Image (cartoon, rainbow, N blue to C red; front, side, top):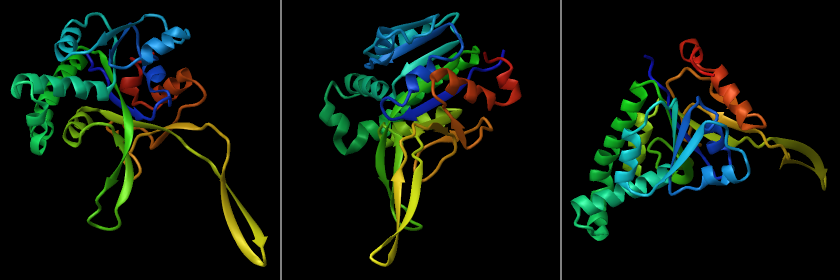
Length: 256
């Protein structure tokens, strides 16, 4: 049996992460961790058939769902922010006597225990993938300042998690897709008081794309031989179709 895909999708609110994830092979189970994306889509009739959702608020509840998955082709986890919260709360309760102050002291909990417990979650996800089930994890993005020892510092869009557990999740993923709107800039040149002036104006075009290769501007990862940029088109269905079309033949042949 071939392994399922292990994808991490990063993007700002409303970019289309959940609707994209719901296009994967069915039957599909969405595990919403303190997120309402699935419920919001269901309210407006945009959830495809053979998709079910369960809302999880605790670490034990998450493991119960992950260990009971049967006959699902895809599991969608929404999102990493909620995942971090329940993992950290579990660490606080089991290792620090319920004290968040001790957990956060000198970043001991997040930086030392966090990767260990998040690694255990990733091991569980790998067990699911080994059964041929796709695992799609969704995460919000945040902008951080990156220290650059080789030149000027810069800002980058990364997965919204604490540094140590973020790297654990990124290391787990087979591919990290950074979803964003590619803003087209129209450049115009004009004379202003006998001086040539060049100005750029963003055109009003909603050109959504997935970036697959790491860049100073955003976090991405590519172990699937994908092109650097994949257009998302004008719908989740088109985004999924474009993504699948770029997969290696061996993987593509088992995808719908």
